[in-house]
Image (tube, rainbow, N blue to C red; front, side, top):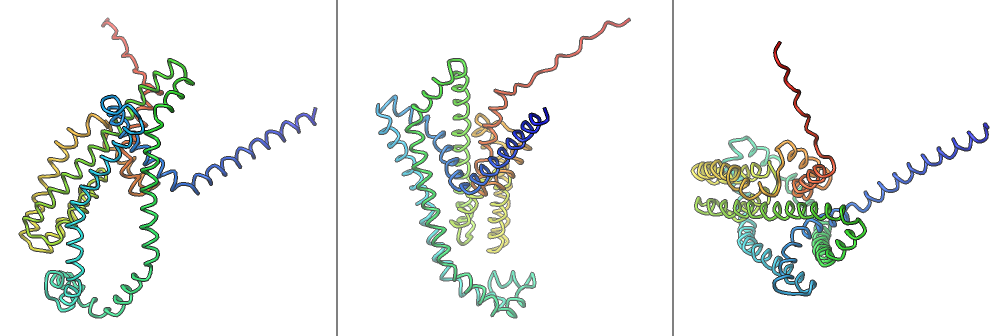
Length: 354
């Protein structure tokens, strides 16, 4: 009897040890392949966003799925490239002008002249800059040394973007076959439920991504026009930073406004006041008009859920996680609503008096 108990105890111990080892190996595998997994998640979001458009083109224009997918992806990335060119061309001009003026700005800062020099003089940093100019120069030379790391980072970024595009293309191309196989294996009732969930997820993701890009584009263009009219230098660079920051939910618009307002006040007090008034008005328009109209039908989440989702996703996947946090939270909300329905507690019957 004791031998049987010992064998059962040994088997349970082996099972527990096996589960612990398996879990450890699985977590180690996920951690070592986290970059590929992040690329796959990003590709899945783009695939979900573009699949309805591919289905429409296949029904109305091209019968072959491969041609419809290729056409939609080509048009999408041509449009994105054209928009990027509209931003990059003035951005490069501003960067070239900034590079040409950098030595002059540094000399003015050391002498206490110009906008930068006066600002450093007001906050007490001009003396520090003059006394530690050699250390600052050495630090700048050290920054030039890791050029190989910068090139490697750019190459990894290009490779990652290419991988995301190819994965998204293949996901959209193979989506009907995957869906048919999954639904046939699930059965009629469960397959219909999964199909309903898939439609809601697709609507949520595509609505959020498209809406967020449109809002950020509007913010960047409006900021560029205001900075240009106010005479603020490097308007394209600042507007690009504002548009990128505006992609981040909740705090992005404030970060972009701080960048633009600070650059405007460095130029002149009048320009700073103009940009400050613009952002006060624009953020009211974005918060109460653009976001409700564009995003309210796709993602319905309260601010607390949005903030927690953004913080957790940013900690796990950086800026990309912050950008995809809201649609991911929307997907979780859909799944919870489907599989964990809230039961309403019926009100207690009222008792008659007496």
